[in-house]
Length: 252
Image (cartoon, rainbow, N blue to C red; front, side, top):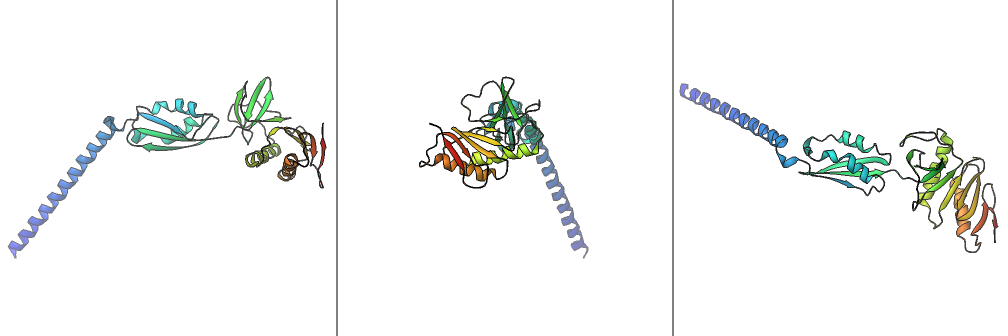
């Protein structure tokens, strides 16, 4: 019995020593891994890739995130990267991923500059929610819609240019229409000087929409009349601002 008890004590002691040894080895490996991760060049970022085809903000975001190069990829702060990228008013959101061991990928989702307002010799580019994206003196080769009759506040890029919720809603409706427009006819301007008599220009045809009720239905009627070869209107006006059949006039 004494011998059996001694054997159990020996086995128990050996087991404790093995456990201690495993713990010590694990601690050493963990410390070694941490030292390797923090001190080694293996995880140092060598490249920042901007993806998502951000035409308006790509170069700026790249410059704003160049400081990532030389940092450890394991310890980058994604929120700081997001905050820095969003200083560009065109940036709506970003997604950050890592290609180990040395590359960070930043996917940029941009706001769409759709509208412009002329003021003091400059063009103010707006998104669908009337946020100011940029102020420029040249909009050549840019497919933008002129907004007439809109009084802008003096704000910094990224801020809302008006406080009128009704106008913002109207322009958001037009944003949806323009993006889903199945025809080859584009809107040149939207005149909201009088919200009871909204006008749009499509080519050389003026569309008279009346008030801001049922704008999608009115635009649908307008575009169908313009593209109808049997009507053949290329210059003139179409009045869809009332119930009943639209009235149109063709200029020669």
